[in-house]
Length: 189
Image (cartoon, helix red, strand yellow):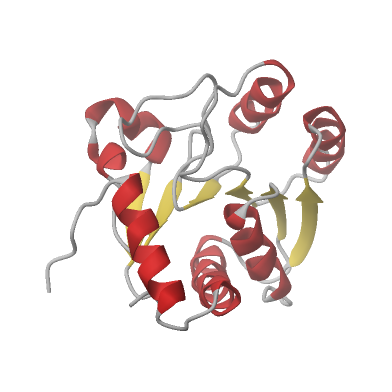
């Protein structure tokens, strides 16, 4: 069955229809967490350190859910609401040489440029040269246009949820998306 390529507004409508039909956001987040877990396991080995950077939105919820399922890996969860504090905490984990970073900072709802302290955090992640698994879309990348909004994560793998977003397929997005993989069955109806 072909998978559609959708816009951010189409994704929002799909989510709205799912919630109206009685599915819960918590159930979908739990399912997405398990899907991210499977991909993170493929990218690492038992005992490896994975640093999970999670923002306050649903991408952060997805990443936090995955972090709870990786009991055979060493997990360090960085919940970031303040980028300066988050940057300091993230830098302290870099010294431990993690095998993977899971990017759950921002998703398709980002509506501003990542600059200043947020930009510094994103650039520190990019400069670390550690493989990055981006949840749904790399943080800072506009999922409709494929253009970075200020700084943007340069992912190794982007695990997009439900269907690819239009902007992830635009040539300008490729350096940020890395390998695009689709998790089509996340519980939306």
